[in-house]
Amino acid sequence: MNNFNQENYIKILKKFKKLKYDFVDYSNFKKKRNQIILRHDIDYSPSAALKIAKIDYKLKIKSYFFFLIKNKYYNIREEKNLKTLSEIKKLGHEIGLHFNNSSNFDYKNKKKFHKEIKILEKILGKKVNVFSFHKPGKYIKIPTKNTIFYKTNAYGKKYFKDCLYISDSTGRWRYGHPLENMKIIKKKKSLQLLMHPIWWHTHRIYREDQTYKILLNFKKNYE
Ligand SMILES: [Zn+2]
Image (cartoon, rainbow, N blue to C red; front, side, top):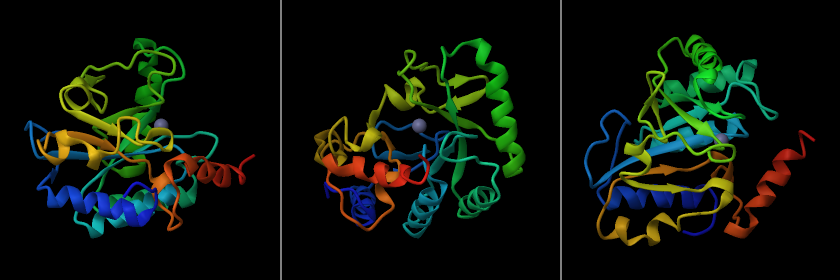
């Protein structure tokens, strides 16, 4: 289960179900045990996100997809991405803003933040209640207030410090593989699990030390 590909993605989620974890919303994440929030940050490819959204749907899991408005690799307002967003929404998943705080996050960011929330709300035709920071910690300490500018912060203490937090950022399990973690397998501690679709969407098998190849292949089209 240590390699990165679609098959293992499915295996990991099935295992959480077998361990009797409930996949829940940020809003009803309350219990100390047996709850999991499945989060996907989209840094590169909306089409990889859609593949993962379909898998989650088939597994009867509602998950969260956080999109940037625009970066080097995609613009959410492009026609094909609008279609992707609408499909993910139709599958019953929740969409949030992936906010790029390229400078210190303080009240000066409020305008940019609201502007981006509004763009996303207009596209989705509904309120956006939750967001995650893109590359938090790169420029600043991660703001861990549970709510910022009236929106749920995925890095809020409640979802980041008071429970387990497991992430595959940069294509490796920085806090260890979730299913080798005794706090999960034995104690069933509640957690937020961040899985980036880019690492999991293909059928090809990549070891943890090979995931950089996925990015190299992806980036070839942009550079
Ligand atoms: Zn990101």
